[in-house]
Image 1: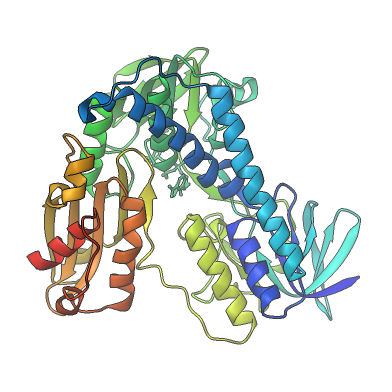
Image 2: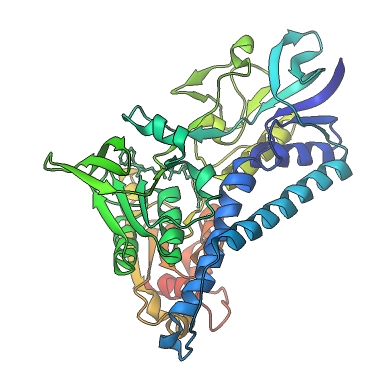
Length: 456
Ligand code: NAI
């Protein structure tokens, strides 16, 4: 039985990054991954969806160039070519992770891994024909789509009429009518792509707003942008059944309505994967279906850590990267703790939304004497130059007492690339007067944050 300093179960963002960092620090490391390295993020989530959305953006530019003095005729989207390109992007990046693992000397076991128990050396696992043992174990088994017991949903998934994030990224034909169940991140990004590609898209959302915890004003602007593009939003509507060729839902008045569909996307959230690989054999504590971890990513069992979606805290790839690093640092004996107050979240629609930190409501709930400055994105010259009729905004939430940034929320092009600067402002707690001394590039869209700082 081969003995490792660290065995990582799951090769997604939490797992592969932790394995890389551990090996680079000199730990003998193995990672067990039954599918491709990169996990959901690289293979059926973040990266492939961005590849599709970029194709859509080019198509949109071609179709709507007149406002910018450019006329394109005959633009077409070739869905098979879009998917082929997406597959090439994924292959390149997955290959890159494999090469990095090899370079760092990480043992990659491409098998289904199962915890079999523990002995005097540590935690024992079986993967394919191999038996290995780790002094430390990192659980990074990720998450899977929630499939609720809605009549007809499972049957629809079996026939292919209903899709999850996985299948929709491989669709080689554009459905004439697409119904999206759930107006959260996945639902909106896919609604965006298929709307650009020509589908008639309907989003059925249980809550009275889209985009989940996103600031309400920003969520409303996003909705209006997509309504203008032809997406229909059925808010406050709960799906009650999936039938052949339709999604049945109940609206707030209790009326039963029906949305015809050629295909359906089910995107109503994800759940941590904690079963089916022997976790119970170690007595690792779970709560509400997720592994319980402290701020050092430790579970209740000494030597067992959990990072990424499996701990159910913040199901985002970038959170997973950092959590994996925190786990490794603690294994190495360095004290490192995870902080969740400055994690950016982005919806890669067009325009994009990007948020970090508290909304005004959240800041007040947390007891801050908080204020908020809202500015039109049109304060940025570059934004005006690039967004004919753009209605983006930025909201800066700040602590009046200590004059610090508590949150930044925006809807704009490049928002995804700008938001880390705001995260830095929150994380470092630099006071707003000092932030005003920062020189921003001009003309740039990010300058609007400087403008917002000067409003305080
Ligand atoms: P989500 O939690 O973002 O949204 C699910 C939505 O479905 C919610 O708005 C909920 O109210 C609604 N819903 C639930 N049951 C419903 C029903 N019966 N009928 C109608 N609506 C219903 O989950 P989503 O979009 O599936 O994404 C899963 C995870 O993946 C999230 O944690 C997200 O953060 C992550 N993700 C992140 C991305 C990014 O950072 N850009 C991209 C894609 C996914």
